[in-house]
Image 1: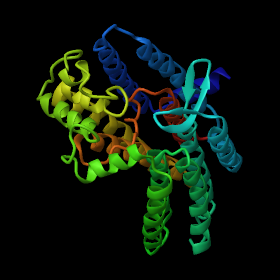
Image 2 (image 1 turned 30 degrees about the vertical axis):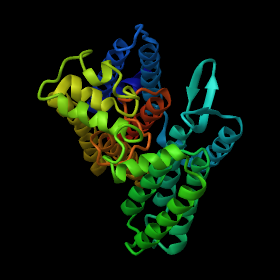
Image 3 (image 1 turned 45 degrees about the vertical axis):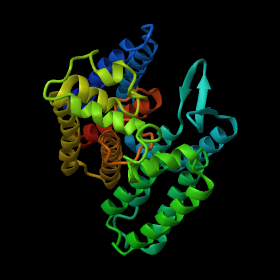
Image 4 (image 1 turned 90 degrees about the vertical axis):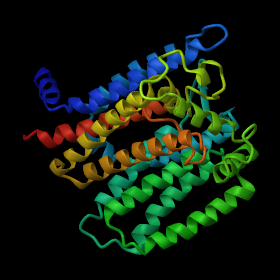
Length: 368
């Protein structure tokens, strides 16, 4: 056991872990900074995030030692479990910010859709890896599309447009990686328009429609629906090169910027730490992505390759959309900045993903 532990640690990709820890460190600093701006200082969110960070690191190491092939063989069962959980949250879940997508446990809230993203990546990685030597036919395309559609539909019933968008994005990334014909993109485009139209008239809440309309015309109503975006843009622009200093951001400290520790934490970083802080954050993401992609050439199995591609796609797209929300080039869809925004569910799910990636990399280096 000790020998195996040493072998695993010797082949652990420490640069991936370091990049994640540095992103979490930025998160904790800025969440603490936001707490300073409250009328009476309350470090509860900081302490919660610190606890989730510790649990997340434990999960990362735990899953780095769990054989990824076991997860591959169990991926179908995990997928069906994800469906059951999404149904359960619609029945027994609690409402948070207009979305019935949370389970409350002893004062803590967990958002199951964050873990459903892992289930989808595992399922598609397993399914596509089994097609590695087969022709990618419309039947295979339809099966993968239907598996995603079920999850997306259940998430839209919450309704959570942002998470449903990410589930579709994961599928698209892995579909392209699997080498399906480009003609299927037309089918995807038509289906996307149809789903969006149905969602607009039957599923979206008024505030969600306001967010989309704000993206289309952000200057139309800066005092109401587009207030968040306007304040975020002001915060990003006012940071300058070195920022105003931690705890001295006027937009976040004076409460001009709502959801400062969640959706708009990037704006807080830009205001308080300036361009240098932003470049550091992007550098840490770049280190994470580059290490994951460099590992692909050494992965001996298609499942591992698809899982890493799907996971990197999830993190990159969510990062891109969140930053885009903060600078006004993407609609506000309630997606956290990976590893940085406040939220235990997102952080724990991402740490599990990193742990699985580490196991895949470790197994690619070990020669039995």
